[in-house]
Length: 312
Length: 307
Image (tube, rainbow over all chains, first blue to last red; front, side):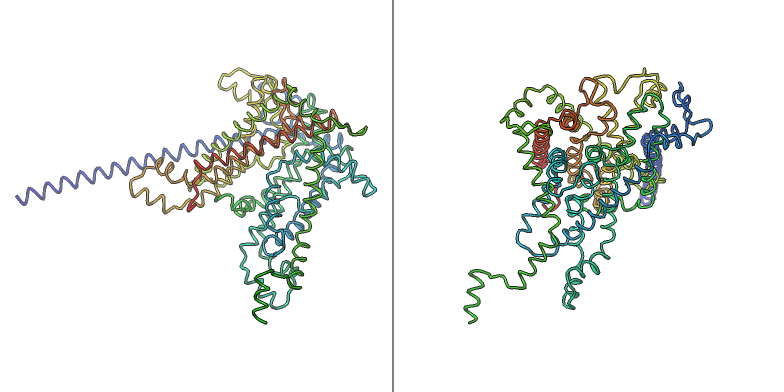
């Protein structure tokens, strides 16, 4: 009786162990297959993401005959750096790049400076009408820029010259002046959220010591807000660097064009004949972005965390 | 004395000098936005309403035409075609983009090898300036020398003239937009950090399989992020412009004449400032209406923790 029962237990536990082993095995195989599928999918999609860009860069170094080879010739026999020299000869691309740098620098600086003050006013200061203006701020974030395009163009071409006595069209002014007036609600919102997360006790202590609001902002808030400031700088730089529509309507002279407008005209002119030259100009416009991306990579993701949009 | 002071405080709180000084300081700090809002947003919007009722080519004086622009809108077949193309583009591309970006974010949230490489590669299209990506795709879709037909040839699929065939051009633009879904993917990845591991583990102990955990835990907790990406994605895609101007100039047969391109053309090529402003208001209204509809619908499917 006793013996029988023990042997029965043994058999049962043996079977259970074998079963568990099998299950473990199955899980392991499932895991491996899962991993292979995940990597296969990701490799395929990553290739789809980068191949078009690599194709442009490779084609920018091809000879004309290689660009139009059938079947496709993926790499140039010998890289022709002369294509770039050729592109710079045909259009003032360096000047256009310089223009972009000037416009982006002034616009980003204006956005950061004005947004910091306004965000602090919304986060910490008390003034009548604050909640109404905050609602307006949120509303501007949803307003499509296109509604403002035509009236702003008329404002800059007709009204502002009459008021100020100098021309605005075909200068950088319509591109760099508005950012100094905190017109990008998103950045104000991002900074305000960040300021709100800083303990108010820090400011109270400084205020008791007699520090002015400006000093508190400059010496306490800003040093603590570096991640948010960097995010604003990067987002607004990306925006102004690749902005196309506004420079297109405000700048009419090739020497004032930004790089985006310049290479588009270049493309229109040489679309049919010289892909390699157009691709060289495109690669030229892409290089600054790639450099900035690799320097500041972590801030790209961080900025999205900061807005709190990711979570909610 | 104290009673009097208190009753005064209850009756009408008179701002003290210090209080007024604080208010003035608040206005000073907020001044850039207040001025900027009035000059660069409120005034242009008001002026744009004025334009809706006027005909103006910038060369002669503006001429009042009442509802002329709005009537023209209803009679203009291009406006309808343009709205249709824009709506199709916005909805189809955004929905596919959201699905893809969510799927990729789920995969990249796993602790796998080469994760950073994949993340960087998939994000890359976002940093390509829009004009440059228009160059790339204009040629990638080229019937004879483009990479798309080259790939299809490997699978024995006949080449097509993607940007020159009426029924294909819109799809080509949608594919191009899906290509740059990196921003959405990163937003999803950020959202996934807020899905507590402990909750999934608890469900696993209770015997929930991987798919069950996905549908019953990850997806509900991610609905706010999905909703955010949908709303922002649709608002942004309604404003597509540069790719169409560069790649197809709105063709073939207006198949890719997106609203912003049409607004640009009416305003800055035909100098119909009034009609251009009217079209812009139409686009704005459509965006607002769809955003409101989405918010209404979101009450049924978006799950807010503790809300």
